[in-house]
Length: 114
Length: 111
Image 1 (cartoon, rainbow over the protein chains, first blue to last red):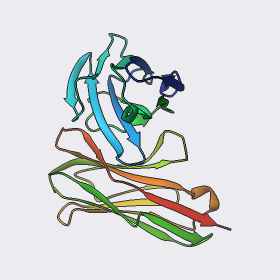
Image 2: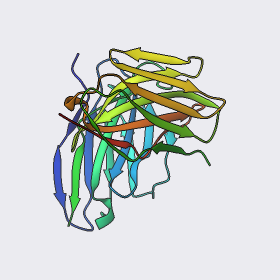
Image 3: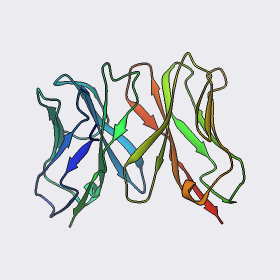
Protein backbone atom coordinates (compact mmCIF):
# COMPACT_ATOMS: atom_id res chain seq x y z
CA UNK A 1 0.00 0.00 0.00
CA UNK A 2 1.22 3.46 -0.83
CA UNK A 3 1.85 5.69 2.16
CA UNK A 4 0.52 9.13 2.94
CA UNK A 5 1.58 11.65 0.33
CA UNK A 6 1.79 15.40 0.69
CA UNK A 7 2.22 18.01 -2.00
CA UNK A 8 4.09 20.16 -2.50
CA UNK A 9 7.09 19.15 -0.44
CA UNK A 10 8.53 22.65 -0.28
CA UNK A 11 6.97 26.08 -0.61
CA UNK A 12 8.28 29.60 -0.36
CA UNK A 13 5.74 32.39 0.03
CA UNK A 14 5.75 36.02 1.09
CA UNK A 15 3.80 37.63 3.90
CA UNK A 16 0.18 38.30 3.06
CA UNK A 17 -0.11 35.55 0.48
CA UNK A 18 -2.20 32.46 0.89
CA UNK A 19 -1.23 28.82 0.46
CA UNK A 20 -2.97 25.49 -0.04
CA UNK A 21 -1.39 22.20 0.98
CA UNK A 22 -2.64 18.80 -0.09
CA UNK A 23 -2.66 15.41 1.59
CA UNK A 24 -3.61 12.04 0.13
CA UNK A 25 -4.20 9.43 2.83
CA UNK A 26 -3.49 5.73 2.67
CA UNK A 27 -6.12 4.01 0.55
CA UNK A 28 -9.12 3.08 2.69
CA UNK A 29 -8.31 5.49 5.49
CA UNK A 30 -11.10 7.88 6.40
CA UNK A 31 -9.46 10.10 9.00
CA UNK A 32 -6.98 12.84 8.16
CA UNK A 33 -5.28 15.07 10.72
CA UNK A 34 -3.01 18.07 10.22
CA UNK A 35 -0.18 19.23 12.44
CA UNK A 36 2.23 22.15 12.49
CA UNK A 37 5.78 21.50 13.65
CA UNK A 38 8.18 24.27 14.64
CA UNK A 39 11.40 24.18 16.67
CA UNK A 40 9.89 26.39 19.37
CA UNK A 41 6.41 24.90 19.75
CA UNK A 42 6.97 21.31 18.69
CA UNK A 43 4.10 19.41 17.10
CA UNK A 44 0.76 21.14 17.42
CA UNK A 45 -2.58 19.82 16.28
CA UNK A 46 -4.45 21.86 13.68
CA UNK A 47 -7.58 19.87 12.82
CA UNK A 48 -8.93 16.43 12.11
CA UNK A 49 -11.39 15.35 9.46
CA UNK A 50 -13.38 12.15 9.28
CA UNK A 51 -15.69 11.37 6.38
CA UNK A 52 -15.62 14.98 5.17
CA UNK A 53 -16.54 16.40 8.60
CA UNK A 54 -14.23 18.32 10.88
CA UNK A 55 -14.18 16.30 14.09
CA UNK A 56 -11.58 18.13 16.18
CA UNK A 57 -9.92 21.50 15.97
CA UNK A 58 -6.79 22.88 17.61
CA UNK A 59 -6.12 26.38 18.90
CA UNK A 60 -5.14 28.13 15.70
CA UNK A 61 -6.58 31.35 14.26
CA UNK A 62 -9.26 31.30 11.61
CA UNK A 63 -6.63 31.94 8.92
CA UNK A 64 -6.02 28.19 9.07
CA UNK A 65 -8.76 26.16 7.46
CA UNK A 66 -9.16 22.76 5.91
CA UNK A 67 -11.50 20.42 4.17
CA UNK A 68 -11.80 16.80 3.20
CA UNK A 69 -13.17 15.44 -0.03
CA UNK A 70 -15.32 12.37 -0.64
CA UNK A 71 -12.22 10.35 -1.61
CA UNK A 72 -10.69 11.26 1.81
CA UNK A 73 -8.06 13.52 0.29
CA UNK A 74 -7.64 16.65 2.35
CA UNK A 75 -6.42 20.19 1.85
CA UNK A 76 -5.46 22.85 4.30
CA UNK A 77 -5.35 26.54 3.52
CA UNK A 78 -3.55 29.34 5.26
CA UNK A 79 -4.57 32.85 4.31
CA UNK A 80 -2.72 36.10 4.95
CA UNK A 81 0.55 34.37 5.71
CA UNK A 82 2.72 35.61 8.57
CA UNK A 83 6.41 34.99 9.21
CA UNK A 84 5.47 32.78 12.16
CA UNK A 85 3.63 30.39 9.85
CA UNK A 86 6.97 29.07 8.61
CA UNK A 87 6.94 25.44 9.67
CA UNK A 88 6.79 21.82 8.65
CA UNK A 89 3.15 20.89 8.06
CA UNK A 90 2.42 17.23 8.59
CA UNK A 91 -0.60 15.23 7.62
CA UNK A 92 -1.55 11.89 9.16
CA UNK A 93 -4.17 9.36 8.20
CA UNK A 94 -5.74 6.52 10.12
CA UNK A 95 -8.18 3.78 9.34
CA UNK A 96 -11.78 3.25 10.26
CA UNK A 97 -12.77 5.15 13.39
CA UNK A 98 -9.55 7.11 13.61
CA UNK A 99 -9.54 7.26 17.41
CA UNK A 100 -8.17 3.82 18.15
CA UNK A 101 -6.05 3.42 15.05
CA UNK A 102 -2.39 3.96 14.34
CA UNK A 103 -1.64 7.35 12.83
CA UNK A 104 0.48 7.20 9.67
CA UNK A 105 2.30 10.38 8.76
CA UNK A 106 3.32 11.82 5.44
CA UNK A 107 6.74 13.39 4.77
CA UNK A 108 5.43 16.91 5.35
CA UNK A 109 5.37 20.19 3.47
CA UNK A 110 8.09 22.65 4.43
CA UNK A 111 6.61 26.16 4.24
CA UNK A 112 8.88 29.18 4.37
CA UNK A 113 7.32 32.63 4.64
CA UNK A 114 9.55 35.55 3.72
CA UNK B 1 -4.84 21.07 31.17
CA UNK B 2 -3.81 17.90 29.36
CA UNK B 3 -0.05 17.79 28.86
CA UNK B 4 2.54 15.28 27.73
CA UNK B 5 6.13 15.51 28.96
CA UNK B 6 9.18 13.60 27.83
CA UNK B 7 12.38 13.17 29.78
CA UNK B 8 15.23 13.36 29.02
CA UNK B 9 15.22 15.91 26.20
CA UNK B 10 18.40 14.43 24.78
CA UNK B 11 20.35 11.25 25.30
CA UNK B 12 23.69 10.03 23.95
CA UNK B 13 24.69 6.41 24.46
CA UNK B 14 27.26 3.97 23.05
CA UNK B 15 26.09 1.26 20.72
CA UNK B 16 24.78 -1.88 22.41
CA UNK B 17 23.26 -0.24 25.46
CA UNK B 18 19.71 -0.92 26.56
CA UNK B 19 17.88 2.32 27.19
CA UNK B 20 14.59 3.68 28.46
CA UNK B 21 12.75 6.76 27.26
CA UNK B 22 10.08 8.25 29.48
CA UNK B 23 6.74 9.86 28.76
CA UNK B 24 4.38 11.26 31.37
CA UNK B 25 0.88 12.65 30.97
CA UNK B 26 -1.37 14.64 33.23
CA UNK B 27 -4.72 12.89 32.80
CA UNK B 28 -5.27 9.17 33.34
CA UNK B 29 -8.38 9.18 31.11
CA UNK B 30 -6.49 8.32 27.97
CA UNK B 31 -7.81 6.56 24.90
CA UNK B 32 -4.45 5.39 23.60
CA UNK B 33 -0.77 6.29 23.45
CA UNK B 34 1.54 6.08 20.47
CA UNK B 35 5.32 6.21 20.13
CA UNK B 36 6.91 7.64 16.99
CA UNK B 37 10.40 8.28 15.71
CA UNK B 38 11.33 11.22 13.54
CA UNK B 39 14.48 11.52 11.51
CA UNK B 40 15.76 15.05 10.82
CA UNK B 41 13.57 16.92 8.34
CA UNK B 42 11.31 13.94 7.84
CA UNK B 43 7.82 12.87 8.82
CA UNK B 44 6.98 10.61 11.74
CA UNK B 45 7.20 6.84 11.71
CA UNK B 46 4.84 4.97 13.99
CA UNK B 47 6.61 2.54 16.32
CA UNK B 48 4.02 1.24 18.77
CA UNK B 49 0.41 1.94 19.66
CA UNK B 50 -0.93 1.03 23.11
CA UNK B 51 -4.67 1.10 23.73
CA UNK B 52 -5.87 2.21 27.16
CA UNK B 53 -6.83 -1.38 28.04
CA UNK B 54 -3.31 -2.68 27.33
CA UNK B 55 -0.24 -2.70 29.55
CA UNK B 56 2.47 -3.09 26.92
CA UNK B 57 3.30 -3.66 23.29
CA UNK B 58 6.40 -5.14 21.69
CA UNK B 59 7.93 -4.89 18.26
CA UNK B 60 11.37 -6.33 17.66
CA UNK B 61 13.84 -4.61 19.97
CA UNK B 62 11.21 -2.14 21.15
CA UNK B 63 8.90 -2.52 24.11
CA UNK B 64 6.47 0.12 25.29
CA UNK B 65 4.61 -0.02 28.58
CA UNK B 66 1.66 1.95 29.85
CA UNK B 67 0.72 2.72 33.46
CA UNK B 68 -2.39 4.88 33.45
CA UNK B 69 -2.62 5.19 37.22
CA UNK B 70 0.78 6.85 37.44
CA UNK B 71 0.43 8.70 34.11
CA UNK B 72 3.52 7.13 32.59
CA UNK B 73 4.72 5.26 29.57
CA UNK B 74 8.20 4.00 28.86
CA UNK B 75 9.83 2.99 25.60
CA UNK B 76 12.54 0.39 26.07
CA UNK B 77 15.10 -0.06 23.29
CA UNK B 78 17.25 -3.15 23.56
CA UNK B 79 20.78 -3.40 22.18
CA UNK B 80 20.76 0.09 20.67
CA UNK B 81 22.31 0.67 17.24
CA UNK B 82 23.52 3.82 15.44
CA UNK B 83 20.49 3.49 13.15
CA UNK B 84 18.27 4.10 16.19
CA UNK B 85 19.51 7.71 16.32
CA UNK B 86 16.45 9.92 15.90
CA UNK B 87 13.97 11.95 17.90
CA UNK B 88 11.42 9.82 19.72
CA UNK B 89 7.98 11.31 20.29
CA UNK B 90 5.22 10.17 22.56
CA UNK B 91 1.63 11.14 21.67
CA UNK B 92 -1.44 10.70 23.83
CA UNK B 93 -5.05 10.76 22.78
CA UNK B 94 -7.20 11.80 25.73
CA UNK B 95 -10.71 10.37 25.36
CA UNK B 96 -11.64 10.93 21.72
CA UNK B 97 -9.97 14.29 21.52
CA UNK B 98 -6.95 15.36 19.52
CA UNK B 99 -3.55 13.70 19.74
CA UNK B 100 -1.21 15.64 22.05
CA UNK B 101 2.51 15.26 21.49
CA UNK B 102 5.39 15.48 23.91
CA UNK B 103 8.43 17.55 23.02
CA UNK B 104 10.48 14.46 22.24
CA UNK B 105 13.74 12.84 23.25
CA UNK B 106 16.63 13.28 20.84
CA UNK B 107 18.63 10.07 20.88
CA UNK B 108 22.14 9.64 19.56
CA UNK B 109 23.73 6.19 19.51
CA UNK B 110 27.44 6.32 18.72
CA UNK B 111 29.57 3.40 17.49
